[in-house]
Image (cartoon, rainbow, N blue to C red; front, side, top):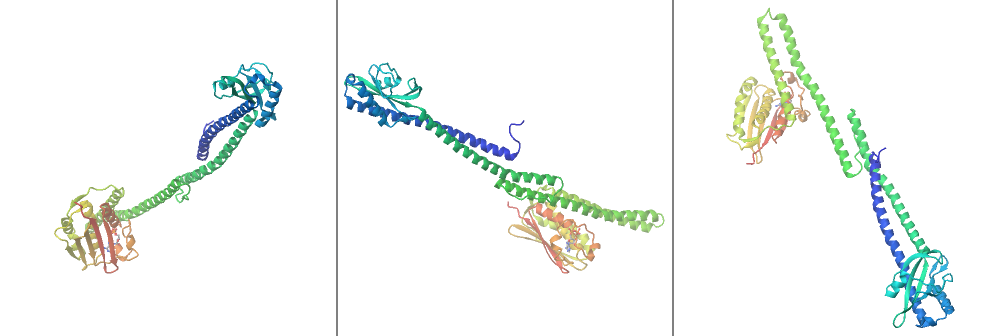
Length: 481
Ligand code: ADP
């Protein structure tokens, strides 16, 4: 058996209720005790005042000399006082008893009290000493618990007699009992309401959590399309929202992974098929015709080069996507651009296009990784040559802006159709044109370029008009130093 339930709802509800039980219970007990004391004190005080009043009345009526008082007259006077005091207990009048200074009973309003016997009690000692003290004790005449007070009748030098007033504690006890009952029922009502609210509150917290759990379990089993409705307290609602975003991102990632794997396989298959075909042909013809052999070998080298490039691009892409930042430094990009222009001159020859380099001798320092900048610009430049027919123009330009250095690569090539523009930076995306088969590519170049530019806090943008050419703009942040 477990002491505390494991479910969230019952745990929360039980905790709330326990807390309320402890606090409200404690408060009620404390208040009850205070009230109980106050009730007793008030009753006793009342008795004391009455006793004092009776003592005064007695003095007025019978004078100072207690010895001369007629017992019968006294008795009936005491009965009148008892009546006038208005104190009743269980239909019985309060009792007024007069005792002399030796504490012997002179007379009593209650006939059951034996006259002449000595009455030695606390309240008389107190009254003699000049203060008031009551006592609750068992009374053998009435066979019940009573509360007693006494007031002294003082003569010229000393106390002459005492008035003792007493009444049954039953009505006080009843009052106190009723007060406790009242408090208990208020406590009960509070507790019942608390229980209701606790369960409701606990449910409102637990339900969204339970839904979240159920959804997570479903997702764990592969139902990635599942989402939760964000609800409940703020924090849990936020959790729900975050959960949905996370799931969204996860499914996107998984989709992209799948897509990537498919595309990659496809991209690798064609050069591999090309290789295999030529290998087969070589086996048949190699011995007979050396020229053909040379030819095939050259083509195969070309395929292998392409394969190698695609694999390298994939690896570079994977590294960039892992988010590892390459070290950055401050440098002047102008020499890098000149160097790159030199490097690329064989391509210029093959493409038969005019290549203009409009880069100032010096540019402001940029804060970037030089190797990545070089590769990014190189990719875009290579594309310009690839997609510009002979006799076109390719321009590499660079200039300083307030916060950036801008590198612009423009060509007068085939251009990019508007519907393709938003996708050219996607992985494996290639514009579907007649030239596509003429130009060797993987569709990874621009994806890599964008990642590298972004890894250096830069931006890349493109504008293009079909048949007229394209302009690529790369902005890299200037160094702050
Ligand atoms: P690829 O390896 O195919 O060149 P990229 O990612 O570099 O892959 O380019 C994606 C596609 O964008 C290319 O297939 C091409 O269709 C188009 N493209 C890129 N640069 C140019 C350009 N300068 N002129 C026209 N089309 C371009």
